[in-house]
Length: 402
Ligand code: GCO
Ligand code: MG
Image 1 (cartoon, rainbow, N blue to C red):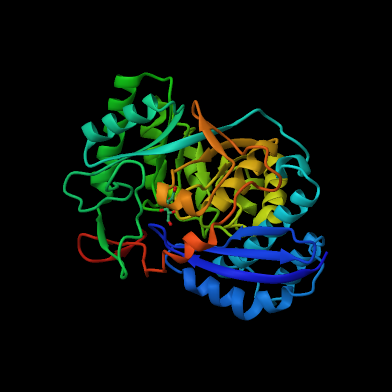
Image 2 (image 1 turned 30 degrees about the vertical axis):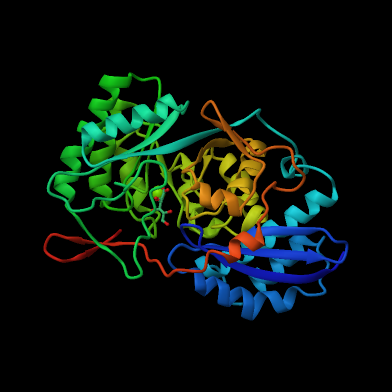
């Protein structure tokens, strides 16, 4: 079964997505996601200039060899651009293999380990009262797990405080929006949000929170400690993880569970964190970490240390990634939770999919492959629009981690 064509499709149904469609001489095609939020065209160029020409005529069945060819063969290993291009090819080839086998992808991976996939949604508000109300709306929709973010008094545009309930998208302008940050104000305010949420809703719903790399390790330790009474499901990206050792310090001070990894690309980014049991959840997902082939290795490695998965699932990952991730989640023995920030109706129309939400869970559906397609005619009606993620500065103007 030879690859006859590979096309990169860029579309912007509300936000930008990069999709790879691989066709074979048998008539079966596969779809992969290559979206890198705010840097989409870098991956498009990498795919078109360096990957697509090498795919034509290759055997679509040899997924492992293709992965090794694109990873080792590039010489310049790793990085978000390269690994997203590899992920797109890998996802499309698994899609093809499962379609040919006439199986949903989770069956090909080894079969379902559970009946459905626990997901969490995003509740945001400008202040604590608004966030408490937003969490209530998620509970009413059936969610069992909810990430809560709130504005901080005196801080202009704090992270995660959306405009609109369900479809908050941070990449909101062609050039980066400037937001601000104040760590002391945040550290005082965040526990008050979770006091209010536990007072109102009790300990039934799982609560999650994203720190988005804003704290130093000792500050993250303080936050973790101050949130222990709230029994968080996790706090995420409490400090930047380039230096994986930094998490040792946080770990020494708190039993609040830690999640990390949405910006990692390979198993090497998480090796120390996992094997030293410095985290509880690994956040890499299919598009970010080189596709199903590599993510499966990460999950198996994590399982040896009782680290569970918590795949990134913000709206900048297309429905193709969501579909592929849900098959992976249904299989992964050490699955923890899946992020599910809903796509807009406009996006869903461009990417018809088999997965569905019910009672706080998603199911990938039983369509053959990963169950997500692209309507190319509709996609063409939404041309690319440059969009960047924001940046953050401290009050004195110092650049900070967004
Ligand atoms: C998350 C993420 C997102 C990111 C976004 C950037 O936990 O979902 O942190 O909110 O900011 O994916 O593109
Ligand atoms: Mg995050």
